[in-house]
Amino acid sequence: MTHIYNILVRPIVTEKSAYQTSSLGQYVFEVAVKATKAQIREAVEVLFDVTVLRVNVVNIPAKRSRRLRNRRLLIRKAGYKKAVVTLAPGNTIDVFEGVQ
Image 1 (cartoon, rainbow, N blue to C red):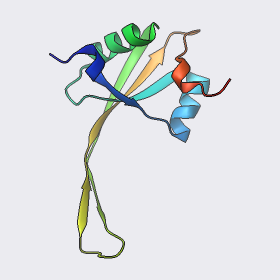
Image 2: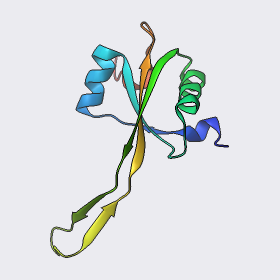
Image 3: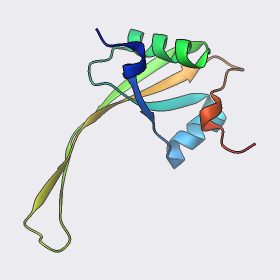
C-alpha cells in the first residue's frame, strides 16, 4: 500500500490550472501511477485540511520528441497520472494562491 505522503507527487501550475484554481475551485496534482481516486481524496483532505467534492483522474501518455542538433535521436518523456481535485465552496489550498 502506498503511504499518504507518496500519493501526491507535485502540483501542476499552468495557465489552465491557474484558471481552474481561481474560478472553479479545482486544483491539479501529479499523483503516483498506482493511486486510486479514494487514496487521492484522502491524501488531499488529510494534508491540506479541506473537503473534497470530486476527483477526476487522467493518465497522460508518454511522448517522443527529437533533439535539435541530431534529428535522428529520439527522446522519450515518461507518462504520468494527473488528478483534478474539486474542493467544496469556501475551501482553498494556500500553496496555489501565490503572493498575497
